[in-house]
Amino acid sequence: MSETVYGIHAIEALLTRAPERIIEVFIAKGREDKRLNALVHELEQLGLAVKVTNRQYLDEKTRNGVHQGILAMVKPNRGYQENDIPLLMEQQPNPVILILDGVTDPHNLGACIRTADAAGVSFIIVPKDRSAPLNSTAQKVACGAAESVPVVRVTNLARTMRMLQDEYQVWIVGTAGEATSTLYQTDFYKNSKALPLALVMGAEGEGMRRLTKEHCDKLVSIPMAGIVSSLNVSVATGVCLFEIVRQKNR
Image (cartoon, rainbow, N blue to C red; front, side, top):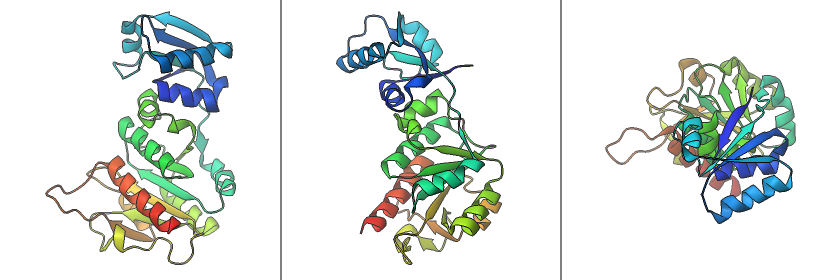
């Protein structure tokens, strides 16, 4: 069974990091674009099949997504599971981990992955249930970051959080509107800049589930000055991650 990946950024990233997954590529007839033409040339140089089709076909395959005139049929990504965490932890001695609890919109998942990549997150953990699939929409929004940031799906999120705390001494910080400490009052690296850290973001509106919240070492809030009470989860993720980056690099 194959999957679809569309958009220039996403296919460029796939070509760079996992060209063996590409089965065949379709491009829109009559589209003239220097960047697209360069990508097609690179695909053909690797001996990959590139077929010309009409825009309607691409629109149907991507459900009217912004495909930029190119779509690839690819072999499914093997995905990451809980038993991959030890290896991921070994690859970076002091990782920043992003945990997403209840993010069910592929657009939001893709945006969070893109932000995580920009902030240098080592990997992302999501629950198998109540989580958006890493489908073509999420990959398109991620702009290629889905190929560089591992997304680990775990059966029991609370159990995984306990394992990170007990076995790897990860300090887990969750975001919640009712938290007494704000993001900017929190010293994420008060003990050591080498501290492994995990940031937990909950679903927009509902926030983190009770059990997830109980397994956090600390809760923080984002101070809101306007009339809105919350931010989109991908925006909130960016705000939090780049405050962590600022503190880590100070």
